[in-house]
View 1: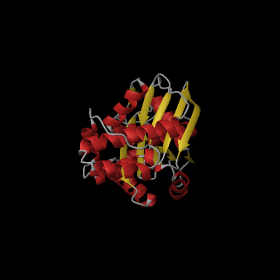
View 2 (view 1 turned 135 degrees about the horizontal axis):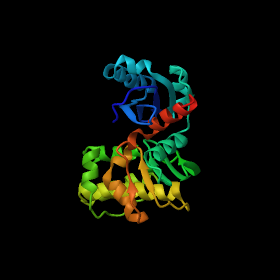
View 3 (view 1 turned 180 degrees about the vertical axis):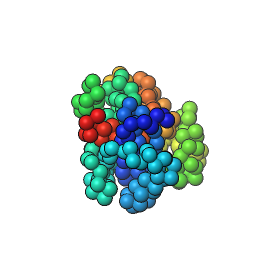
View 4 (view 1 turned 90 degrees about the vertical axis):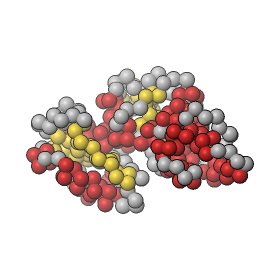
Length: 269
């Protein structure tokens, strides 16, 4: 993170279905501060917690230097009204803006959120094509989290378990079939590592069939969202696509960063 706080600053807030993220950038598009909290059913409370934390850790002069605020995510319109933000931005636009700012080689974005998934193709930083799947829960981060609890492991352990492991076949059609298959495999005595790998392959295949469909990923692919922190899931995509899948250290913050960047443009900078 940058420590250059001189000049005007901009705040982006990403209010998702599972968590809320906040990011502050400076005039040089550098990330200064970022926070993350779970929503637990109350986006207002999680937004307040993020902002309260920022008030505690950043100097008063920085708060007074914030010249624009943008919101994004599923709760963007509601939170915009609550905090009187400057504008709300759809998730695809916000994530694309941040992705291109982080690496201008990008032409494809894979994004798996808590309760939805998106596939975006860019050309020269502009969204050329995008599709969102918010109906099927089988290809989302929440499903992975539920299966981690079922296997009695943390999300980090889940990723480590599945690394370099061959897996039995499971359905990629929906959560009902996938969970049924896992129950059968557990009854057959498959170990947790194999089951973890099976979950990730199912999530990957569900995403590719229901979100990507007949579209073709480009040459420079990035994976965004907190789910991209799962190294084994990233590897599963690379194994199928046969191309590198890049993950930024800020992958879980790109929505908030994008909202801050667009707030900056909105305010004439």
